[in-house]
Image (cartoon, rainbow over all chains, first blue to last red; front, side):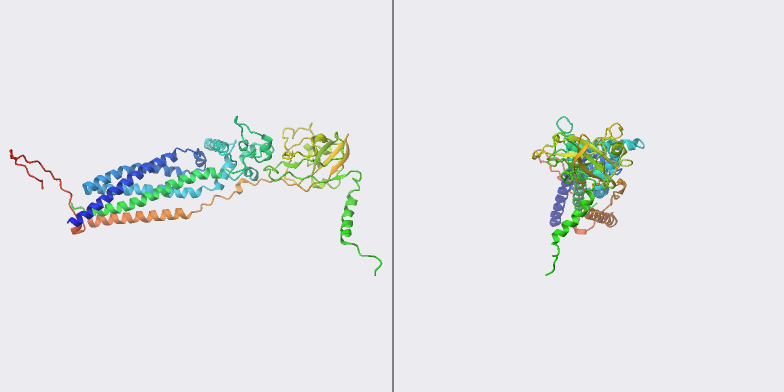
Length: 260
Length: 260
């Protein structure tokens, strides 16, 4: 019995180690998802206006899954050390439930990332930026969110439009129906601003003189943080789930070896 | 040897070029022709918009004129170029901006004395004229020489005309036709294609397979090993709780050494 006793001891040690790692990863997942949900780049109104903010739903699920993983890992450690069949069965069932939720979160985040293309943001910007004749309250709310977000984005990241200022020239837009093309070839926030927040040279900006207006597009500034969020939730979750798979298999094997 | 020599090819080409010029110069015989106006540098982002365009200033072109000559910009539709009459006064109904291009086929604007176009041009300075930048007087009939936004995408042809007390003294050739930008409808932006990336497909399939394996192993575990331990000699019992008490040889207590 000594040999199998050693083998069981090793398995126990491995399972405890596995659960410790799961617990720590759970905390990390919660922290990461809280960071994403707090929206440090202020891009949430753009997602809200697409009426499809599943990336945020995935992050919210991630927060609770992280906590659950941490709690369950403690339960798992206790169950393995005590070799209690009931505890371990409860642990396995609850872990599978958490596994299913985390799987949903990962797949949602990865799928949503594919949805966020430059054309999506271009269409949204042209339709909603500075829109004045809104149909209902919801429409008004979304238009205001988009306008405010784009104004801040263009000011802080020194960019204009999605691909460039020519977006405002190439397509009709709500902005164009409100402001004449001769006065505003592109919004004034595309101009290089001085410390007081007014354009350094408005005529130079309207002419498009390099140095007086922002000639690059904002797509990188939008997609960078969103990519980080989507990949962070999806692939970190995937890694945790792969590890959890191994630990669960080991736990089920361990459970089947315990005598009543 | 023939009497008449065949014409040199260059001479023949020159003669062919002179013929139409002689025909056209019929109405403009006394005015010296200058080079045609050119568009500004293409590094300007707002070179042409949907209602404005930008020309280079006519520097070092009207070199042999007095300083108090007034240089006007003539903007016309191509149909008016052939029979253009230089003697029509600027601001008359035939040349009124507000009636362009319906009843006035050309208008004159951006008048300034030759003093404002000094020669030579200082290096590094941007010397341009933005045609269409004045929106305030576009509907004002009291300002027939308004530099208002162009009403359509064109094409238009321009030239500079030098007037001394309303008499034409010099002019440039007509420019090439200038066509402005036309904005496309934003509904023409392609609906965002939901492209499935390879990463998303891999993630979804791997996670689904792992989850299915876990469920299968759970079911097998419960069915086969539900009521008793599996594996025979590999199984083990719960670890015993061992209590050892110190013997005090002077006092003999009836206490078991280990609980079975």
